[in-house]
Every structure is written in structure tokens, then in C-alpha cells.
Amino acid sequence: MPKGKTTAAIGQGVRATGHGFKVYMIQFMKGNYKYGEIEAIKGISNFDLKQFGSPDLIAEPSDFDINEGTKALDFAKETIMSDDYDIVILDEVGVAISMNVITVEPVLELIKNKPEQVELILTGGPKMHPKIKEIADLVTEMRMIKHYYSSQGLTARYGIEY
Image (tube, rainbow, N blue to C red):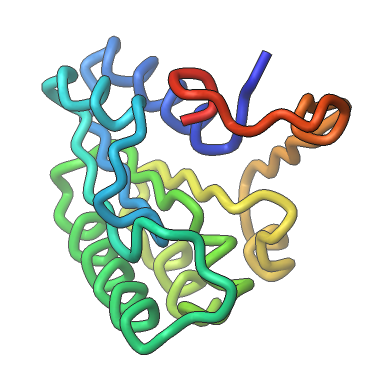
């Protein structure tokens, strides 16, 4: 069963919306790409989403990527502090930090200064910065045991991985 960090975070958000919670997902490094889950979220009235960055995978961040990362952080702070959302998901923030699109310090400040009633979910997997893991209330590490990408040489499948 394919399952990833973003998929798990979306699942948590969908569960919360079923209980009347308002959710906002802010995606780092996933600008304007039409993932299937994004289209599904559009049909959920209390689940909002905004994407930042290039829709393409990057090896080294450009000025554009760094600018988008800064915009995403500013938007995240505004959203978290607005008191309009119960849950804010910062999707791929760990990867953005590890690739130097953003630095860890402003993310740590967001975590430390968020309103008590706002639940933060940060994704970024094994690339999550150790300082974030240290101050987080809950850390889950997802680990691939077997994947047909490597065992069978297959590529991502439409509707399954994206």
C-alpha cells in the first residue's frame, strides 16, 4: 500500500474536518502541481491548501526557490497566528530546511510561539531537522520496507503515488 508523509498528513486533516475542525495545508516546494490529493481536498469545505515553489524537483535551490520558501514561511506565520484554523500542516518543511530553501530558526520560532489551540503538523521525513524533532510533542518516522520503485524498477503511477 503506497503511503507517504503527505498522504498521512492529509489523512489526519481529513479526519479532523469530519469533526468540524478547520485545516490549512501549506506545501513547501510543491508549487502549482496537480496532485490527485490536491484535487480531492478542493471538495472539502474546511480544508484549505496553498502551494509554494516550483512544480519541478530541484537539485539545488535557485533564488526563485528561496523566495518561494520565504513566502511560504511568511504565509505560515500569518495563518498560524490568525486564529482561523485548528490545524496547520507545513508539508515538506523538513525537506525545504535540508535543501537550504529556508532555515530552521524561523520554523522553531513558529513552533514555540504558536497559539496553544493550534495543532501543527510538519512533514519532511528523515530530513526533518534534529532541533525540530527535539521540541516536537510527537515524532513519527515512516520507513520504507519494500517499494516496487527499486524492487521492480517501476516508476510512480498516476492515481497511486501522485
